Length: 423
Image (cartoon, rainbow, N blue to C red):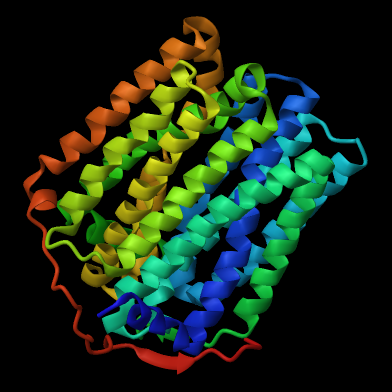
C-alpha cells in the first residue's frame, strides 16, 4: 500500500474530525512551552522559577492521570476530551489575560498551568483510546501515524508561531492563541460520533483501577518501555525545556534561536510521522525503542554549546526518532490491549512515563547552578544513551512481532450505542 492509499484513512469522517481537532489543538501545545518559558524569564530571569512552573503542570497531570483513565473508560473518551479542552481553554486564557495586563506573578502562572495539566490528565489517556473507536482496524497504524504527524505539525507550527508572536508582541498574546486552539478543538469534538462502549457489570473505581493495573503489569514489554520512558522524560525534557531556553538566552541569541531549535525538533517529528505511514518493521518495539538513543544528541550539542544551526539539526534528527518510536509503540499497544481497558492502561502508561518528570523539572535548575550547565547536560546525554540500550536487551521487547497488516477484529462483547454530537 502506497502513501496516497494510506492517507485514505482521512476519508473516514469521524477520524477526520478527530484529526483536525487534534492538529489545531497541538499547534497551541507547541506555542505554550516557549511562551511560558519566556514569560517566566521575563518576570524573574530564573531557571529555577521556570522549572517550578513546569513541574507544577507535570505534577498535577501525573497525580490525576489514573483518575482520568478510569473516567474516560466510564464516560467515553470523547466526553473526557471535550471537558478537558474547555478547562484548558479557560486556564490558558486567564494566564494570557494576566500577562497582557502586566499583572502576572509566578505563583499565578504555576497555579493556572497546573490546572491546565490537570485537564490534560483527562485528555491524554482518552486521546489514544478513542482512535480504535473511530477508524477501521486495518487502518490503525495509518491512523496513529497521521495523529502523530499532527502532533509533529504542532511541534513545528507552534514554536514557529510562538517565535513570530514573541517577536511582534508578548508571551501573553502567544498564550491567547493557545487558548483559542483548545476552543477550536472542542468544536470538532462536538461533531464527533464515537461509540460508547459499556461494560454490563459496572464495578467500583478501585476495581477498575486494579483491572487496568493487571492489564498493564502482565505485559513485560509494556512496563519495561514505560520504566525507561520515566527516566528518559525526567532527563530529556527538563534539560531541553529548562536548560535549553536558558542556554539560548545567554549564548545563542534569545527566543528566536530557541524557537528555531524547537521548530526543527517538530520538523523532524513530521518526517518521522511520514516515515511511519509506510514503514512496518517486523519487530516494531526493537526498532522503536532502539532509535530513542537520538534523545542524547541535542542535549550533548547544547552542552557546548554548538552553533544554533548544528543544535537545530540535532533536534531535527531527534524529532524523527521520537515520532517513529511513538507510532510503533502506540500501534502495538492499541493492537494487543483490549479496547474496553485501553484508557486505563494508557493512564498507567502516562503515569509511569511522567512520574519522575516533575522532580527533574524542579531539580534541573539547582543542579545546573551547582555543577554548571555544561556538565549537567553532558551527564544527561550519557543517561539518555544508556536507557534505550537497556530496553532493547529485554527479550519480550526485542522479539515482539505484529502482522504486517492488522486484520479487523470482532467487536468486544459490550453494549454499544452511538454518542450523538449533543451528548
